[in-house]
Length: 400
Image 1 (cartoon, rainbow, N blue to C red):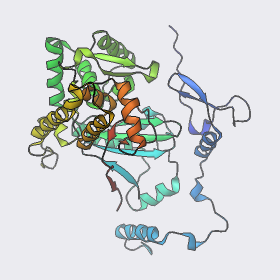
Image 2 (cartoon, rainbow, N blue to C red; image 1 turned 180 degrees about the vertical axis):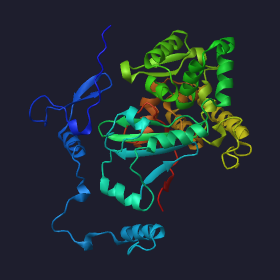
Image 3 (cartoon, rainbow, N blue to C red; image 1 turned 45 degrees about the vertical axis):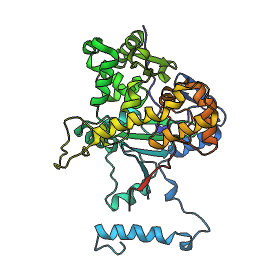
Image 4 (cartoon, one colour; image 1 turned 90 degrees about the vertical axis):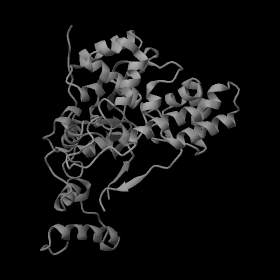
């Protein structure tokens, strides 16, 4: 077998186009295929390859009256607190009970491997980088992702994962505050699989738990969590599919693996419906003391987790027991489920006893269109980890 590895083009080498005119002739690889880039995407690539940021350019016909005074005053106050002798002298992230989510327009300027490895700083806006560095909120070491992973590893939480979304271009970072092997998930998988569970390799257990906790698992995701070679991960996932523990969707790099019938508890409800309850209760078993000695596991958290899982099943009981439930009643059940916690379409389908396709087409999409439900990834309806909730998302100011 002859393997040819094509490296990711450096930001200064983009766009990659067929003729001398990049407009209309630039292509980009997405999973297993290439697609033609729009003119706006080409212009963004050209901008990313320029070492001079837009904020370094002088804008004609603008003056100091165009500056937002409140923002400038807040920056000066922050600067003054660090540099008292200087003559003068935000970013928003989404916080949930079990994760932090960061999203930024554009694409990665370095490869995924380099982003994880660290050591190379490629900033899209050097002026802002310098401004935040002056007030202690930025650096130029290229160590951001590495520091996140180091902090998460110290807590024995699942590794943060980074992904690129195309059309529109965005970089998403999800930082789960959940144990690598949540005790409840492991116990439920043991019950579902039986004696075979004890004969599974630790990487196979990690793959099943990840599919259970996160809703799906992929080869790239396991590369972020283990030291196993990608080809060996592919073979392992194939074995788990053959044994019925996982089911595969998609092809090639876009393949996703979800919990299969062989790892589903009797009654048709997968372990994840009961164990993927957001909250501090999913943190590392036996690691309730943080570095500062402060407990990171809330009192009674495990009991609340069981109560939430039981309540989900109880709420869904009318739909599961009746095949002739009216659309209005079904919507009411789904809304009540999503008010309790965030759920994927697969979780909802299992709870109400309907197919995923039917739930998506007849209920979730109409309910989103009617603003009854909110997608977790509003700009990407087909996101592999798409989930739904009835409550509005909570946000916090990262820099106050």
